[in-house]
Amino acid sequence: MSTPYHTKAILAAAITTISLGSVSSQADDNVNIKLAYAQNSQPVKDALARFGELVEEKSDGSITVTYFPDSQLGGESELVEMLQTGAIDMTKVSGGLMGSFSPVYEVFSMPYLFDDQDHFYRVMDSDAIMDDVYQSTQDQGFVGIGWYDSGQRNFYTAETPINEVSDLAGKKIRVMQSQTAVDTMKLLGASPVVMSQEEVYTALQQGILDGAENNEFALTTARHGEVVSHYSLDGHTRIPDIILFNNNTLSRLSDAQRSAVMESIEASTEFEIERWSEAVDTARDRIRNEFGVEINDVDIAPFQEAVQPMYDRLQDEPEKYALYQQIKELSNK
Image (cartoon, rainbow, N blue to C red; front, side, top):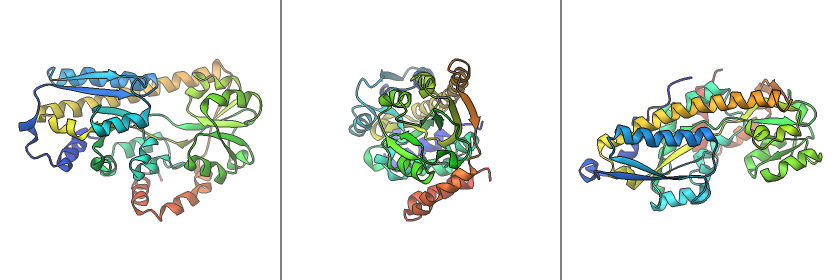
């Protein structure tokens, strides 16, 4: 895996864009960062905790972090709104949600955007690609300063595996409430069923659904592995988590404090990626051995071809299409 993107360049761009003037002369000696996040996987929680430990250490105690975890202050949408007003200083949300605040983020929800995990990491590590994305919310009072891995969404089915596009024909597949997800299923020949996550287990058990799509933890933590027999690794979406920071809080940091934040974010990303990979390996082992679900690899090239009309339509949105082209330039092909 490549080294995570250079946080220094991202934060430097943020400071420049905010037009702070003499930032260091206005900096506070001590800063307490209010960091709130919604319900998250353990690797993400551990990485955010690691960030707090590191930033206090690297800033010689001048930066401390106060946590508001597990949706104490609301869901992800509410947390971004609080970030805008300065009620909190930092949060971590899904890149899927970010499309509501900056349309360019919607590209990351497109199907089969990445060839594989290595392609995903190359894109997320690229300052040339990500700096503009992170800065796209600057006029809303916050910017992106980093990312975490949130895995890939794959198909899981009750009766037959998904190896080819034709295997999805007519199958009733649960999707989250997302027009992109609905359009993807239709182009693949499936019948999308928008349904809350809480209803999926019973719907699979009763045959109302033929399958669903999610990461490995839906089969283990939510125990959907009890009611399906196949997990097909097509990786139709790899949507990153995005770490966000309030503009005014950035303006209060001295040069040394910003360096501490930069280094700590980068280290926490490395930490999270490692923990996420370990958690996925453990989950896949449980899927096979505890739940008895077969896991199969998938050649995604025909699937990418099937959803190409979505990318053709993207040409009508120049900013999004330019980002897509940058992403494809780092493709394996």
